Every structure is written in structure tokens, then in C-alpha cells.
Picture 1 (cartoon, helix red, strand yellow):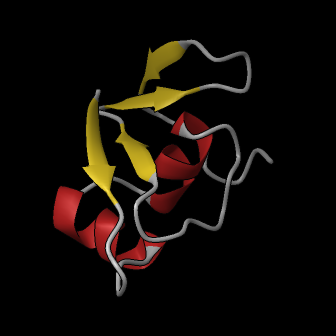
Picture 2 (tube, rainbow, N blue to C red):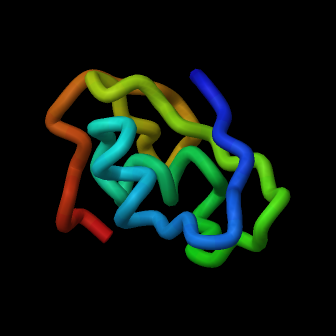
Length: 67
């Protein structure tokens, strides 16, 4: 797991594109949080893993659309 310190113009879409990780994975890695402020530390999971709702990592498929 790596971390990103949010800057003023950062968005989930931008983080997803920059790190190559689907938005759903970033959201799950951060406890479902959808909004971040500048200075917040955002967990960025590996591109090849997903966190299931139980908080465990599992390989793809990450369950997009399960929620």
C-alpha cells in the first residue's frame, strides 16, 4: 500500500488515472470515504489488488458493481 498527500486540485479521478487504480479500490482502501481535503493522506492500494468489504485484500476481480 502506498499513500498520497492530497493537494488542492487532486480528485479521485485524477488519483485513479495517475496511479492506475480504479476509483472503487481507492474508496474501499479509505473506508468508503469519497471526499478528501488538501493535506489528507489517501491510501492507494496496489493496482492488482482490491479490498473486499471485510477489509481483506483479494486479487481481481475486484467486484466492481457489487455495491
